[in-house]
Structures are given as structure tokens and as C-alpha cells.
Length: 211
Image (tube, rainbow, N blue to C red; front, side):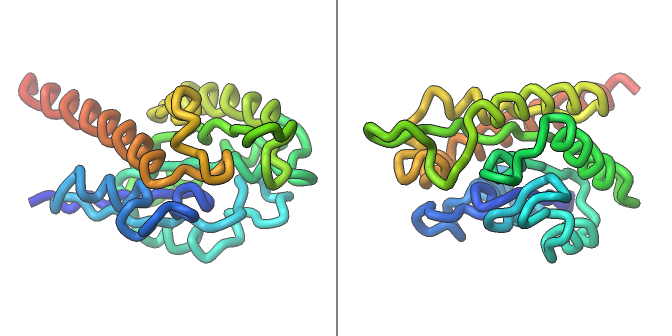
């Protein structure tokens, strides 16, 4: 039986903060159920953390960063950027792209030689009559980051899962605060990841039959 280790790197969205029964409903937990016993999915999401080293809480300095690396994953799922758009964390697109790219390269360089999948951050929504997104998140900055993430995925040969586009059509999935997906939103993410991974696995298996 396969024992494929999957590391879910991210912030509070990956952790499942504000999702009812997050230990069951956070997208990594739902993904584990979808993939089955041949996979070991670990949640390395940390509240408030960002990809940029200059951020108030850089993922680079977190315990989760060290643990996700020592986990020796075969697959790494990276979903960061929401907190990079928050307040003084946002310096410039080039600063974000530089540190995000280096983070991806770090995981690609692990001895386990993992496949990396980059997930764009979920869409940000304003609640009610509010003119701003909660917590000081910047919608324009997030949109720029999504474009950069897509370019980095293409440049480094990583898989891309456009969570931003998926959640843009489901504001109800982030109705708690416009930033954090509830259980239903976490399901949307898990299903998108499962579909992408399943397609990749099927392609690999088909390729093996032609060897």
C-alpha cells in the first residue's frame, strides 16, 4: 500500500480557523478522507502567517515551516498570500514574489523531492455595507499576488489550483467574515485539490503503462 505524505502549508485558512469542527472540516482533513489510507495528509497551517520574510509573522520562522520540511513530504500544497495583503505586510509585488518563489524552491529542494502544488488564496469579500475587507486585507494586492503565483507555478513546473477563482463564485462559503472559509468553503478547496491530484496520479499511471 502506498504511503504518500502530503504537507498542507498555509495560514489560518489551511488550519481551518472559524470552520465548524475544524479538525474534521479543515480542507486537509477532508482531503485525507478523499484520498484514503494510502496517503498521510498533515495540516501545517498557522494563523496570521505570510510568505514574505518581512511580514509580522513570516511562515519561514514558524514551527510549522520546520516541521513540514522534516515531514519529508512527497506532495506539498502551498496556500499563502492572504496575510501578505494585510496592512503593513504588503510592501510590493516584487517583494512577495521573491519570497514566495524562494519558499517554493525550498520545498522542491527537499531530499524527498516532492511535487509542489500552488494554491491561490481565496477571494476576499466585503460583508454587508462595509467598504473594506476585514482585518485590513487588500483586495487589489491579493489579485496581483494571484497573478504572480500563477507565473511562479508555470516557471517552476509546479501544479496550480486556482482557489481564488473557485471561491469567487461562492461568497456564501466565506460568509463568516469574508476571509475565512466555513466548512462548506473548506469542502470546495478539498474537492479542487483532490480533483487536481487525482488527475495527476491518473496521468502518471497511464504513462507507466506505456513504459
